[in-house]
Image (cartoon, rainbow, N blue to C red):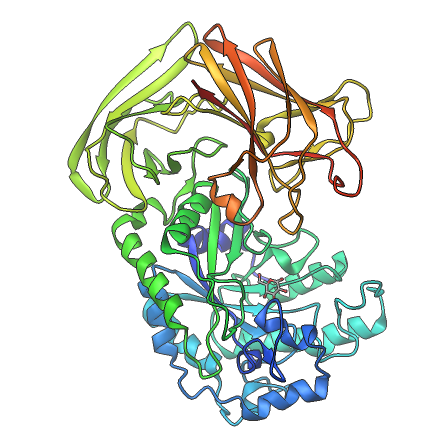
Length: 572
Ligand code: GLC
């Protein structure tokens, strides 16, 4: 095996930031309807959800004939959207190969009237459009196989000879086909690893690298063994994440085509998510689900065109950038960076003056990315007593873009940021749970902050969260307590009580849902804002904030314990 480092393997992927996911298979023909009945949930799961027997499902292949499929058209759509890579389902959970698999006749060339290999066509077209090609491959679940992992059999023994035999006979053989029939492949996107042992994950990863050393392996190979991490479907991390991550995301509520899913996300949400993820160091793998005829649905095409139009102007602030210098989100937008440059992505355009706190570097100049000739006046300040750094920008009256406007700030040297939570331009101080320290008055602390960024498993009133923050303007602050269920499938629960202490002053409150949160995360997880009251902070400089849960209800409608996303302090 050629020795190649993870950094080398990841170089193109880190630069790319934005890719197209394509869920396409014979499930696109029923398109969410089976025997006249609308089958709930994901289009590509119809075999499982409608409990279609293997032989009956395989019948779909006999009429699957995507005569309108045009590899160049798909690549053009991806390129014009500003996407840099394409990940196509080569075999989904239904076990059907969307390419010519000489080892298994259950494939598009041998089992359908179409009889052509779309992956061959895409592999030829992708380089012409500057796209890297990768393959989704469902390694654990294969509903066509009696011994592959099947979600209905949660108790399945991983070490059954049947499962290992399936991996050797089908998975590895097909991976070899995929990695030898189509030239260089950017990545293999493994999925749903719940049933696979560490040895099996490692073995598959090594196997891929032994055939194509430069090919990346996705996080869902399982057991944390991917070349990069995969977030949950549509998962938006609460703040900056360490390492290399990707979020696979949908444009509507399905991956595989469903004729009646018209719940398209607006362009504004998609652009927000693109810059939100980039600001946290996460790639955005955005899905299209072509029809059984081979057409990418028109609403998807239009949304992608909108993203492309924005990226043609603002791509410099996304491609090849790194996560922003602060671990938290801003109400005005997000930050990405490259050496010597901070890109301020404004999702709401400030009225004239804007202040960025916490950057210690000297600012050289600022300008609009959409119009570099428009220089923006920069004034820099440092309050030595409170150790507060501020950069003030005088912005033009009109936003250059309706959705996300980018201001470039050139700075001296390597970014040096004061990461302690402090005031944003409007005066808001946001204290996210993932920046707090978890503590307890006794030694039974159960409270943790997981990858979702939410403080959860908070069952004990002795447990508490502490932040160190910096206050630039003493005065009275309204305290908002932002809560959410621990997962996006659960319902929000309130009614617990909490005590918030800031700079030695305390207030008590009941967790209510006074407002819906404005964060882009709130689209996926049910975040609510509870108005807790006000606290007056007398001094500027460093101080502490503490949240304790004073009562944690436990009954049929309060099953989650106290879950906290953030505390927001707003000057009144
Ligand atoms: C899920 C689903 C699958 C889909 C994938 C995309 O794990 O099982 O249908 O392909 O997410 O991320």
